[in-house]
Image 1 (cartoon, each protein chain N blue to C red):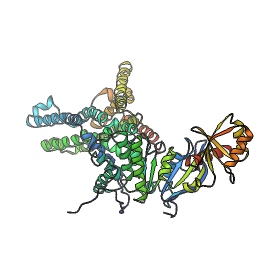
Image 2 (image 1 turned 135 degrees about the vertical axis):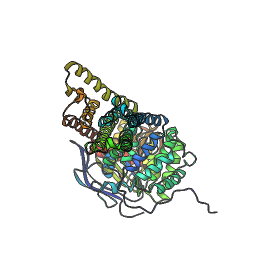
Image 3 (image 1 turned 90 degrees about the horizontal axis):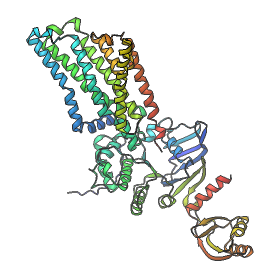
Image 4 (image 1 turned 90 degrees about the vertical axis):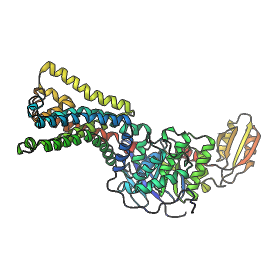
Length: 309
Length: 281
């Protein structure tokens, strides 16, 4: 799937009145699954709005499938399937009618929309329940019907906004498996907007991290979390203040973990630095386990760098 | 016999965008509304005055002396359509209160605006629903009544002096339907609850009529009609059909200007409320 990017944006500035939501961001969503991460107010939603042609940039360019969404929003939108975070259904409508209706709105002929609605509902696991009104569905079923309405017109790019919201662990795994299948077997590109890093890690190959209207990090997850820097989970006995300060002085990063500290070593250093620093700071290392840098580490580091920038 | 796996397949054929993009919106909403038995009962009820007027025309053609107590002339259509305005209001409340309010409540507006549709397509689609419902209780029975009157009493109605009746019926029905539909849609877009929107529409239309009646009782001036949608429409009917009602006798331009201003106001409200930038939450 190493093709030209589906979506590109360059030096993009978007404002709401005096507030700049995107401050000259540049980046690209390649074909395949890409995660879009960032805290609230980071600019993710603004980027999606601009991509769908709802907002006009103050400066810079954005294009999707080689089209400018500000000039040809309908042509862009018909190639995008959007699964919103919030509930969306038409009261009193069965799932089959609702999904077929969504297909028609996307430009499918009526017969084709009906036929595809049934197929897609089977695909997302609602085949048996497709003649029930969506109002009577459980949260998990509503999430699936939202996915079905986004898929019905066979978009080139799927925008999934928090697709596992409100799902129990089993439902969440099923939804992620479905999304993976869409991406891997159906060769559909997708942008997964989520605050659950595990979901993004599970599905996506690349990620773009937004913070404060800027791109804080972007690239392939494998490259971002690769074995470039050693990571250790450490537990110490005694006052850790001096120990942690000394580690920082040596260029290491640390953050509090579940039961101790996660230390990301600076380049070229190994566990001996931890032992030496502990000895010099007067604390006792009670636990030390090598770990791998996760997407969460990348995310938090990116946010930290943005904050200190 | 071939066995197909019920699974997802890619859809290769992507045709051009359809020109009339609002039609599926209108069609599906009408289908949902007309599936309600109570609503069908209301539509049947709204056609009863039509039956009564047909009987009136028939009786007068068979017994011309009845014309003295049941006059059949241009005013018949004006009176009939003013009467139908009340049904038009109820049809609008029950059919239109939830049209946008429900979409806002259930998030369905996302389904529309993230598709290849403009805001205009969405509003026209919803407006089409209310226009269709309103025209079914104003234009349709009005034109049908006119045709029946022409057929039953050609000597009376097939004359140049009454040639304006047909266009007047069409024009008045269109104005009533358009104004009612726009007010209902604008009110519906201001709430997330169909019930609140329905009550607000009811309050707006009948409340202003109550205020008008109070002012009329105090000042005895026909201009008070301009503060009520119902009375403005009635003033227009008086001007169009030559009705004689001093309470509503105004130059036609005044109620027409007032109704035009209301329609523009409603469109501005809709423009402000149905904003795509708000849909990605």
